[in-house]
Image (cartoon, rainbow over all chains, first blue to last red; front, side):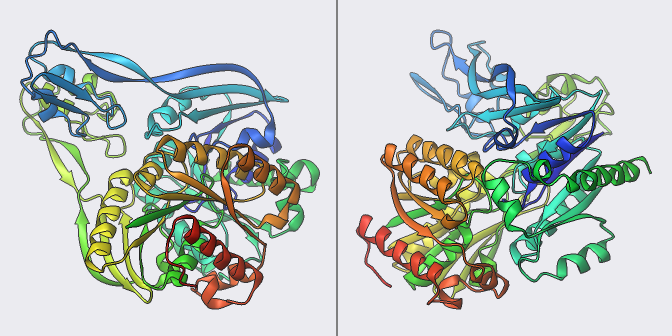
Length: 279
Length: 292
């Protein structure tokens, strides 16, 4: 089973939930898909067993063969290639790597070179397998790195996918293909607003989902409960607003390791999700 | 004209809280909400929309089934796995590149523009606001951020405002990059957690990459003073100026619940006072007129 953890709003506790869930259940792996700001490894301190650089292909023009006809530039939807008489310019940060310029070039003057977009690291924290990526600073596109990271998903065990905040392409790339998505929210106006945003995305993508309410006691949002009831979205777990939990997070400790009474709650949550997926 | 972007790397550290407070303190500014996937600033500044426009930032392939001969060349050539086994277009994977259209032997594929969001120009009590909303499932937030910033610039010119305050998105990818290019200063809001510090480092790297002058604010600094020390040491070693240390105060959440900026809701509380002091420090660093 593949379970993604998303939220819309940042800082609601996605990583906290993903990590505590992954350490509480058997036969699990954790994929931290927030490649812009990966944090799960900070709570797990895995021993890295494998590290791999990831590249994206970008065009490279052979000036000797180029006739400056400009067909590549006309084709490119991202304005990533510019052909002016005597000079070709490629803008790697705009290029999506579709390879269309190569296909349109009548002189066969365009080839491709590798452009590093980040690294993917794999390791173990006890028996928990963790895979995470680090996007190169200055590289705009997270989705290709997430795509590459998800190829390392081992289908023989349960996978927990920690998604980035927001609701844009990196989130879509993460949750795509998941059996279920757990949405972590907090009962504040911002948390509730962004929960509604991400629910719309999941409805559109047809991915079943449930809600975990974190920091219960902060804010005053009864609306989040009313909303979930009205929309028939199950509330899977509530985590209270406790200084101890926040403190453990700040020090990089998954709170269920210090508060073992939570382990069974995370196990139950996972069983509930399993039942919903199998229904 | 000066532009200041508030960013964080990690989400939920207090970017919007601070951006809204700055807007109130400046009294007459143009504010841009560049967190277009999950915008929140409007919930504190209550914009009155003056203008709404569709934003078409991307295209998508459409296959004409009456012409399609099911040869599958499009599926083979697509690098985004956006053509399904049944030779239909997966809208969540299609990046609108047009390769399928040029390889199709019977011209059955065309690119169509899609509305990927809406941009708004609004009036707020403290000036003007440029903002947007990405449609659910759409993926072009970087371009939409650029559109929001262009609108903010036009607004500032029209209203003779010499300052744009930008509330940035979390992360360091394309929307964050589009929010910091060409600005005069980036204020990174961090929190004293291991994740906060880790993400602060990457946000500073991003600002350096674009030659933007970085500043740092540690929010809720008293939650873990050891970690705050670590963050401050990192800033010192990297020659980054820390302009504020905001104490934890539940009143900040209370202000949010009441739809108000902290400096409006409880101007005398310690957190509001520190935000105001931070704004004055930033003004003097950036040679801006002090308004509070």
